[in-house]
Amino acid sequence: MKFFRFLLFSAVFLLGTVSCNKEPENIWDVEVESPAEQVQITDISKMFFDPQVSLDEFKAQYPWFQGTVSDEDFANRKNNDEEAKLYREAASKVDLKKLGTELGQLFARVKYHFPAFKTPAVYTFSSSTQMYADPVIFDSGAGFLFIDISGFMGEKNEYYKGLEEYLKLSMNPENIIPKVSEAIAISIVPYDEVSQKFLDQMVYFGKIMTLQDAFLPHLPDHLKMNATAKQYEWSVANEGNIWDYFIENDYLFSPDPRLTERFISAGPFSKFYTDADRDSSPQVGIFTGWRICRKYYQEHPETKLSDFLKTSAQDIFNQSKYKP
Image 1 (cartoon, rainbow, N blue to C red):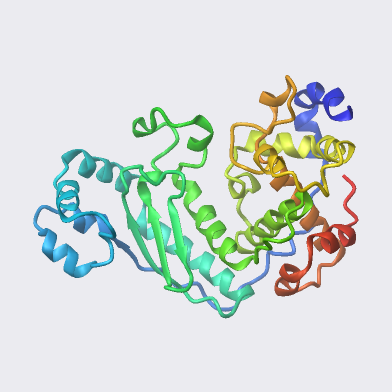
Image 2 (cartoon, helix red, strand yellow; image 1 turned 45 degrees about the vertical axis):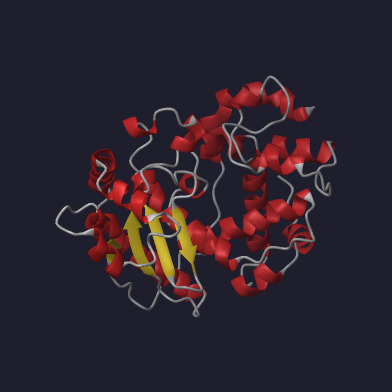
């Protein structure tokens, strides 16, 4: 197959290929008229681990934070020196003032494209790395945004020993904003539980990535994908080969759920079931869906995002004229 015929040569020509591909004009780099406001961030764990604050005082201030945890366990956590130490480590890695500025800029762009968007109340906290897989929680209905700072201490942090390496790649402070943007995008993009062909899945995630482009027009693409620059460049260099592989195997309109696990789910690499797998980048299905959506906007730059999100995967694919 063409994909595997060229794969071994991609590393040699990678830099040349990427540098010679001129990216089209960034249609999302628009001036936002409403100035971005500094977002006020409440650090819940700062109060929680403060020995001068009693548990009753804390519960009175944040009665919803305890959740289903028993009073005994909640008290033990508050008085746990190791958890307090981990929180201080996490807090030292995040500049809340800078984060507030960046969140303000992000929210301003979201509101520019979706005027009904309301700025959420933002809280940071430490789960002691228990929520490392999903460190951002956005609830548009309740108007809350929670950021678990223990999930962004830096991929080489000693507290992350034992975690899968591919998970650590997006556990840096620079990953906070793209993960917040992703959470907001997921809340906006409609999910069709009926249409579940591989193309549907790719374009669904492609729509989410398109909103990432709109919300974060100046952010490097690899950060939007929770990937390294090298991984993203591999996908760009092998875009045509990946597409040929999908076409040759009749994957586009397949409802096989295993394709999601192989090419969309997070992992260390994509699963082509060859010896070349470990050299590949993960989530090439999301990458391909993103490229289809970008090509659609090259063909139809006047399309409103609200209309784009309502358009079916089949129509987006057909009208994109995607042929890498």
